[in-house]
Length: 212
Length: 103
Image: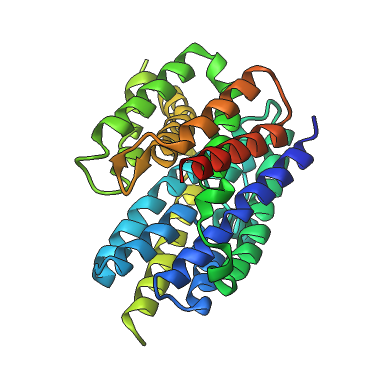
């Protein structure tokens, strides 16, 4: 098992889903430049998809900003965790913050040693960044040629990766209970609350289980 | 500047600010063992809920479809200790096949 190889394969697999983002953004009347700007500067898949979806469904820019920012909230919590592992200052911290996303954090915490956690964070972060941007451009330019992304399995790439990330962690009893409860909780409330709430609200589960 | 660009730029700036603030929170605030335990659990709960949303909802509504087949293959492959690329490609291929057969 090589940390670098696993990290880069996450980068490639997740990055390839950037095709879906580029294609959806252009199909929803965003320009190629806007799609690429989002992948370069916002760089957080769920926020990007939600922003495009809200505006194309006729939502105001404000509601798109609120939804996108809310979905980006968990990256701040990942930042709290990663800062403890990375211990960076200045420019390096600013760069690390930019690539603090689901994948880089997930692959990092799946590692045993501190050194491997750091390696996994950077390789996964930059790997996803490179491929996500490359494939966003390809998807935006080739929106019509790709057609239905579900027909290529792109809609399960990301959840399958997170299953792989979570799997080794769930051997610990507390983590297993926290994971299963969060899974059930999110699905139970999703119908009744705005996008993003089912995910971010699981912080309460972490607080309760971690309390003592 | 049109409203799309406003939304794109403002959301991008806010999302970066959130990421940076997470990294910049003073370590002393996080030193307490209880805070340590909770911040350790946070990625687990968020990613578990994220899997649930990505695999079993469509436009925020609960939905079981072709993705279940893909996720099942991923979990079985993980239990069988197959390598990571096999897990992901196996899940994608299965989901795509089930999706296409239904059409």
